Length: 164
Image 1 (cartoon, rainbow, N blue to C red):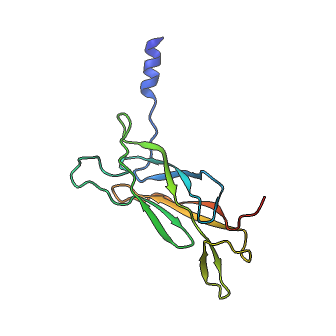
Image 2 (cartoon, one colour; image 1 turned 135 degrees about the vertical axis):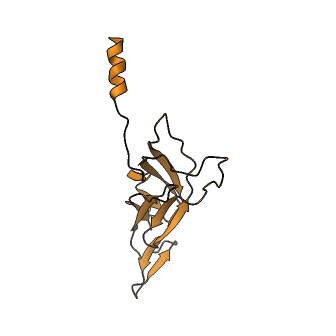
């Protein structure tokens, strides 16, 4: 009986992922934050078939320490850039998957002024809406410069603090 179990285990193939990174899901620690005073955390689930996510191994010649995770507030269309530490493959295959936690600073509300020009508003103003929804585009890159898919995640900013 033991021999049969060992034989079955040897036939099971590990997950096979493509060589470019792939984001499988993104979530946030909070559904809404206070205007200009409260940060939050992104939880980013990923997989990569050749295990070259993150910076090069410590001590490697010409270590890659460039930005490899991009979180873009779509209102500005300019990414916050992060560097993911080296993620070692587990076991004898190069496929890796996991979850990254990334802390993000507070954001301010943005409203269109009378001329329909977006203006940042970090100070509560009763003439402005109570909420602003921010859409973030999240993408990562591996050491071979393959970019992942983009996942968009929304969060609401409470622009006005109401007395409860």
